[in-house]
Length: 105
Image (cartoon, rainbow, N blue to C red; front, side, top):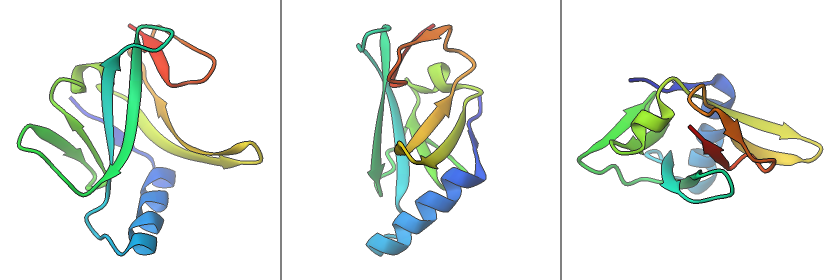
């Protein structure tokens, strides 16, 4: 199982590490039941890596329960006129909602 961390996400996380003076800062992605499509992504910045966590490219971390839902995903950072956000391109999602934070498998 794997997650690809795009250069855009690596660059943004490195910027956040520098701004916060936190060299171990990572983007944690958790998948939980809920949202308008069945599952939702929870994104947070953290320095904590738990025993059952999986780390990708030293920048993204997820737990072993969320990993099957994220397998094969690419994490990107989008910055445009509308705003900036981390984006998850998930091949396991068969449908999603308009806001992009929930999906169905």
